[in-house]
Length: 463
Image 1 (cartoon, rainbow, N blue to C red):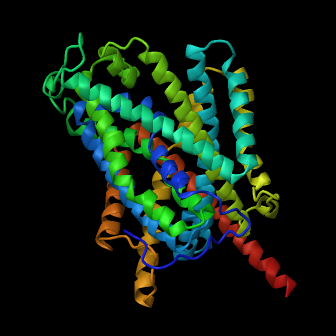
Image 2 (image 1 turned 60 degrees about the horizontal axis):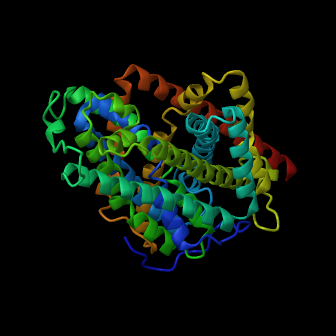
Image 3 (image 1 turned 60 degrees about the vertical axis):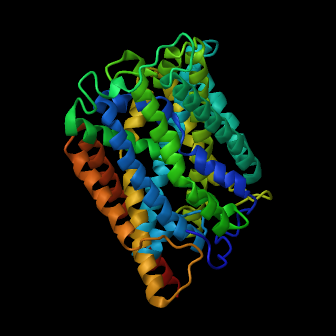
């Protein structure tokens, strides 16, 4: 997948094209490394044992196909609305607006959850300020960063992502040294944990399928690269480089890390509550717990920063297309959509108040609200690419970036996604989340259809 012809300029002309290629590439790398890896990977191992590697490979394959599809569309049409714009072009205005509003609502909730999660983690190692006050500080700080300029946002996210990448590389180095018996005083478990304690798949296929739905959400946010492409000077080249890294970053960062954790820690170990710290403790590094906690805080704040950027650009694009209030499309002299940023952080500031009164329940409540929205967004992206690519091929349209293996890989991604939905409906917890998400989608679609009809009626009345 490489650029073949020059790509058009970004469609959202009110925004600045000042993101650099290295920033977009590092955003792509960093988006695959979040709290889902640092803190949530242990849950998958406890569910499926070492066979969780299969779950990660399946989920990783899906996001690779999604990113290849998004890369093709983003190079041909760089737009801050990304998959919302592509769904509109492929399936109509209601489909485009529905997926745009769905993704924006998802990110608004995730922003609040990430600020609160980072605050609660930081309190465990630095119990000086209450979590609600730390949440407020984080929300104020990252709102200011996103209001400054996209260049400052990109540079900040670049260094955040670099920190996470460096942490994973060091972890993999320590883990490999431990498994090879190169650390004095630390006994290597070898690969015994893949055969002991019930074997490679101690909970059978049921555990693997349940873990699949647990780990699939760890990859959420990777699609933000398609949104950011609209603010790069050379979107086709920048997207090509970012998308090209998706395969090895999934294999190295996720599969590599999970392999080390599953090899070092038995799937029945209590240390899986904080898996990275558990591995480093086995390696004889007593400071591991505090270090990993601080890195997890940085990972959450990096994700907050990226998701706030993505949410503001999506609502800006919806406003540009007359599918959200028009004032949200206004930009200042630094080409920052100030109103779009502020409306995207409003729920996060409300969460500060909620955490003050309900500190024990608010985080779990927020995470449950997110549900399975990312799966529907990915599904719409795959369907849009399939429709738009067939349309372009019939018209003989040159594309600056072409997804190889079309239509077979596109169809494979759609089939894989449908299989994951089937698995999700077999589990009571994930079934409830899926039903809630489908209900939300139906409500958004109906409201959009009513809005579009009113828009047509008003336009007809003015003629």
